[in-house]
Image 1 (cartoon, helix red, strand yellow):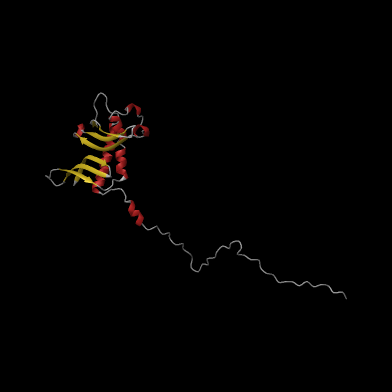
Image 2: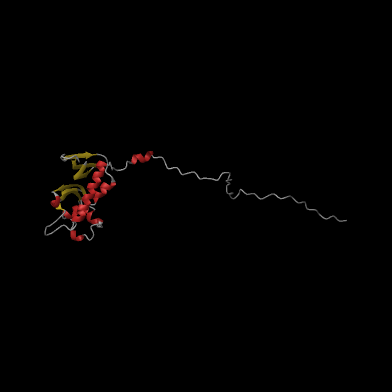
Length: 207
């Protein structure tokens, strides 16, 4: 059994929506289209994978100029701090395959504005090509991998309540040699001066 992710969303309340085609490896079987909603909280790796798309949504949506980005792997946080990608949709086939990003932008008023980017093909032959197609496809592939692990391996966020029931680790007992004498280091005040014999003073007698 193999699956191919073509749509993924991270919604409020840690809800995960995913659409995929499921292909049975049995000869002659046809792929089945599946749409699922899951309520197990997403793993931090899945959230980070979606966060890597924030700068792409800002640039493809023309809120940020791609000329302002010197290194797509090390982007100035201020350029994408107001953007949050909540989903992606794969469109097209093979060489014409691309993606639509669904995102939110936080405005100066504190309100949020939802938007979808135009289709961005991974191979961009236009006169004004997107400069970061390779990184975009890498980020999408990472999202798809993490979603696959979520579905097939149950890679969810750790349950914090389980940590409450974990017993603290016991330190191994110190080993002592058989018959060894363990003595306490004397502290100040423990040692008392030895009492010497009293000497009687003999006075000389006059003869």
